[in-house]
Image (cartoon, rainbow, N blue to C red):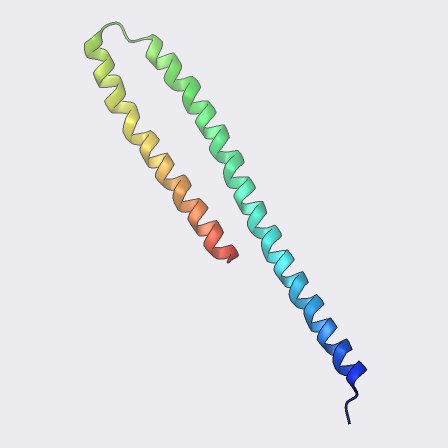
Length: 94
């Protein structure tokens, strides 16, 4: 016959194991999100510097419209990739 203290010990062990599993999954997800954030900030900073330098080379208004067209789509693509990576990391953590 199983006694109550043995059942409580088994339940306690199961709860600790579940908590540790949850903590490991949360830490892994946080690590992925932090890595994504660092890469995103670094990329945005580098792109900002590159775009600022390119903007200083614009001589007149007609060149400005061409510059914005050439730099808008890559930025949008990077933002979409960042959002996709964020979504994948959060759904994997769930």
